[in-house]
Image (cartoon, rainbow, N blue to C red; front, side):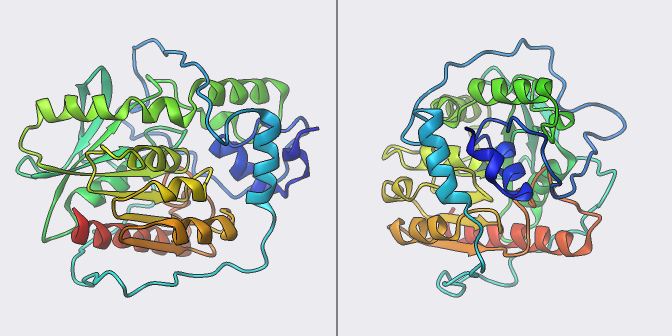
Length: 339
């Protein structure tokens, strides 16, 4: 019997959206509100004429079988009574004056960047041409959403001391998870979501990142140092990439990451920040933090849902908007010290 049937509605929704479990066989209950805006009025940024490539399901310690994933997920998503905030807010010398984030646009955002073909992938590219530092961004399963693109634009230019060129490759080849499949309340949606997660496991994407970075470097040789940031599903990709001893990245950031595994942290040597939501397991986040050996910043945004810094962010809610801004400020302060 699928574990997802026994999880509370908001946590089951977060689990399904992250690809941690197959969609439940029963109709999903209520979940946190989603923004349904997909693109600006001029174009659909998720569209791509390329044919979707089916990747084999790459196994890992948490992806070996549905039974094992369900057992692990139960541990990760057991409801918690409290959400502990950061235990180390002042240990990294963050400058409070580093960031000047422009007013966030709640609806109808017009992205500042452009799309380029890099390494065989359509890529959203934003940031000044004179930037010498770059960020590879791994989006969530919903692809090029306005909330995600606005976040990339914020990262590119909001630190007055150092600006970045940000690259968001379309790993889904124009076929992200449609927001209309969520919640998975019909057999067809359940089937579609299950197939999507089978086709796009984080290890398969993590294996492609080094070659993508090489392609970016060939096109933008002015960029000399790199960071990587991932959201939800993309957070797991960051763990896998930065745990490689030969990683090119000087720092990594995971925002409301899926599949938080303390064992991954043991192999991560570069500076890493993890910004958790109320939906990640506090126990696993705490263990992950304890296992990180290098400089780190781990913080839980205790009243925010899994996805508040990316596609699922309801920026028309003032509290969500303020924490969205604070999240990006935290990322920029961390990167200003380590990249």
